[in-house]
Image (cartoon, rainbow, N blue to C red; front, side):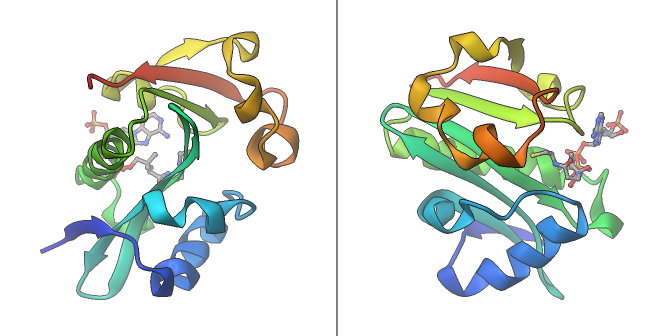
Length: 145
Ligand SMILES: CC(C)(COP(=O)(O)OP(=O)(O)OC[C@H]1O[C@@H](n2cnc3c(N)ncnc32)[C@H](O)[C@@H]1OP(=O)(O)O)[C@@H](O)C(=O)NCCC(=O)NCCS
C-alpha cells in the first residue's frame, strides 16, 4: 500500500535521489519542501511532487515516480495531493515547466501557455532561469478554490 503524505525534511535525500535518477533539477527544492508531498511505500519514498510558492501563484515541480511504479496512477495521486496542499496555501494559479511530460499533464487539467503570461516572480525562479531549457513547455492550471 502506498500512501501520499506531506513531505518531511528528512525525506529530502530520498526525493533528491528520485529526481536525480530521472534527470530532474534539484535547485530550489529546499524552499519548496513545506509544500511538497511524497508517496511512501514499503521501500520508503517512491514518488514526490512539490510547489514553489509565489504569492497566489505556484510553480509545480519535482513530480516524479519510481521507475518500477510508473503507470499505476501514483503520478496522478501525487499531483492531486500537492494541488490540495497548494489550495490550502491560497495558491490559485499553478504553472509548470516540462520537457518530458507535456503530453501527460493535460490529462490532469494543465493547458499549454506562453512564457509571457507567467508572473515575473516565477520566471525569475531557478527552474525558469537555469534548470529547464528555453525549449521546455509551459503549462498552466487554475485551481478551483
Ligand atoms: C510523468 C510521471 C510523473 C507520471 O507518473 P505515473 O505514475 O507513471 O502516471 P500515472 O500512472 O498517473 O499515469 C499513467 C498514464 O500516463 C501516461 N504517461 C506517463 N508518463 C507520461 C509522459 N511523460 N508523457 C505522456 N504520457 C505519460 C502513461 O502511458 C499512462 O497512460 P495510460 O493510462 O493510457 O496507460 C512519471 O512518468 C515520471 O516520474 N516521469 C519522470 C519524471 C518526469 O518527467 N516528471 C515530470 C516533469 S516535472
